[in-house]
Image (tube, rainbow over all chains, first blue to last red; front, side, top):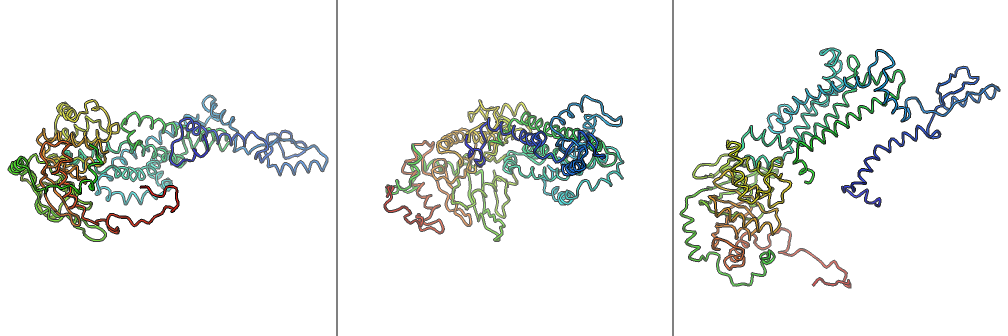
Length: 321
Length: 315
């Protein structure tokens, strides 16, 4: 297989190459991370002290910049006293892959160190609930409104200009307002997710609805379909596969609003877990938590994609053109 | 019968042909009977203009014609003659500015199941199986699920697609899709079937087969067909009468009675009356030097092959 095949415009790669390349998209970042972590002469800008020697301000386990360490060592050498000893190390905000992997594992097995702390999965569960309610409330109003706006120009003109305006207002800007109105617990967080999702949702779904082939509606009309039937028997089934795909994308956006939402009022959920762990410099836990979000997000998306293929057997038509 | 033979106007040009107005006694008698049938569709002084950036453009002007019951009318014309606009007005998908469209003597208003339509792009509902597609109109008419299903299966049987009743449209070939579309339109038992270049996207062989199917359906059920095409052979082969339109603005050029005897069969494609009709329509819709910017039928070509090229001439 020559390289020129890899860059054929809009050609699908052979299945084996596709699988391999897909795997590489995960392995390559991991490889770079491993190189940075395990090869001592790549990066490693600090020195971890094992023996402070004669330098009074150093302690075993302490890390300091290579230059500062070299200066301290040189000074000790000049004065003929014991030199400090250490090994090249990365800053503590970049733990090695195995440390994060261990943190990932112990997050589920070992009880939290401090009593006030929650387990990782408890924090995650809180976050998932916030996402769920925010996204559900948004969808309950946004999906019907989007479909109606895409179908009837009247609804579109009545709502879309305002929605268009509102979507430029950053959701986090409503944080203080949400707390003032809804208190400090889950409600304002759900409200932020709602604001972040809803306005995009209406516009995206209205556009998807407008993309429905108009001749399908004409055909239905010549077959005797009238208004409610056109909406429920043609428009909705006609866009449902695209709608489903939109919802997957929108759910991804909802996750990005989560971190901001959870900083509002009393910190909670995965954000609280992350900030708390960062405060105690348990960066391995921080990475584990961030990755957990990624895994949940990607997992949900793959699950929904699989589900979509099951529920909509005609969907292959869209891919084959 | 190869399509190529039919397509070559030069091959027949030198032949001595009768006038397309000459009808054999049997044909003349048939047209007399046809004209005595009740009028099904009446179009009176129909006008339609569109607003464009360059101002209002007249698409149709003073279109008038009558169609009798169980007649097969083809509409043909050069591009821009408004034949699609005409059929869309008849279907009720487009409004007209002035004039009248009467179906069974009643003015047509908006789309309705009394005028079935078959589109060039199939327009099957991709989320419904073949059976559900055909059931769609029946359910809209308030038929119960079981009755609709039974009736739909009869129509699917009629177009020979029983085995595919549970398939989705994307699993069918173009010809099969169009058969489903025809069955779906017929299931509503419309008074007239409007067909907008229905076989335009099909390959020549499938197209010929579809024409034969359509003739068979038309001769066996109570249906009047108005069929738009840009294919001369198709028009002459299928139609009782051909409505020839001219462009800018779309006006009726002539309503031609096709002198080819019914029922039709493919051998007639070389019959003198067939060729005469075809040649006449060709003259009507393709007047010499019609393409702007061109010198007759020739491109402005100069020799672009080196004089001592290995292949000096293609002839």
